[in-house]
Length: 427
Ligand code: GLV
Ligand code: MN
Ligand code: MN
Image 1: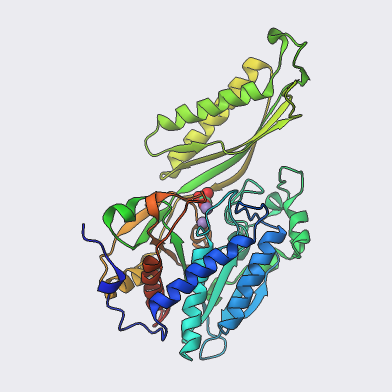
Image 2 (image 1 turned 180 degrees about the vertical axis):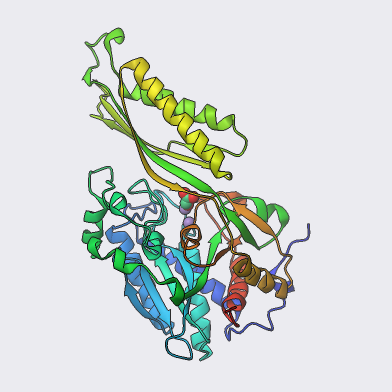
């Protein structure tokens, strides 16, 4: 298939006054600039509630203010920049993504969408343009759910979906989400009041790297997400008995890690036997955690996904049954604590249509593709029409430091975003 390049695009109708390529270079430079806000030196890790995330937010807040926005944080510490409409009290279109990351992350997963959104407002501000609606740029504080084994804790604050169960979730050090909110300068008691009124919002648009190989295979810079996969996250605990590695005979052990290992293999084979299913155990905490001690307890994360919700829930139940059977056979206690279940979410047709019209206006073939990754748009779609624009990434690599995006593709995404956020919204 023919490669779409920036040079072949019709950018003449862009409402932005600045050149798309120059803006894309700024977006790229800013994505790189956020590298320095990390919990670990030499690796990009920016989990919810950490000083690294706060520092990244402060940097982005500076860019928002420079783009003519007023900034505020809500009760969990999501950052918002608001660019006013031509008339007071007009509803806002929400655009953005997240600033938290997985451990040893790439630099584009999340920040690309936030920074493209800032760029779109910056272009309006530079041209002294006010739209009929306000634009709010959202920089969500927890999308990945890495710290608390959940997901979308930031965007679910906006939708009013967070409850006591979420606030009681603990990280691997036993710190609760409620405590982490306080440390981050927020207020767990204010979470309910941070819910946004759907009537105040026109919808949500998110730019994100694809994190898969499809756009690259089609030679396309961007594509429109058709649906976002549903997923389940569970904290699983195996509790046996710690003991001396040199003196407890093999036949008398209740080794929690051996049970956990059997479960990891069961998760692999159960998912492999179901077309479209993926199951991942990405985090294991072994206690007491010493080379000469039989493991007494293991806490592990389970992430299970399937495009069909009923299939995912059936596999979830099958995995729970399997975990309990493994525990029973080895006299190991099994704790099964569901942390999050999110259904698959189709894109809103009208919002996706805005993106498609914008892509077509740029002379790029319109391509729709599903997302196997989770996104804030999935959470937001519970209260507003939501859609996503994917940007091609090299080799489909993501959740890895080698994640990469081309400047020209960012420029196309900006051209699409400029158009999609402007113009009238249906009543
Ligand atoms: C988020 O990136 C997820 O899909 O886990
Ligand atoms: Mn991610
Ligand atoms: Mn992401």
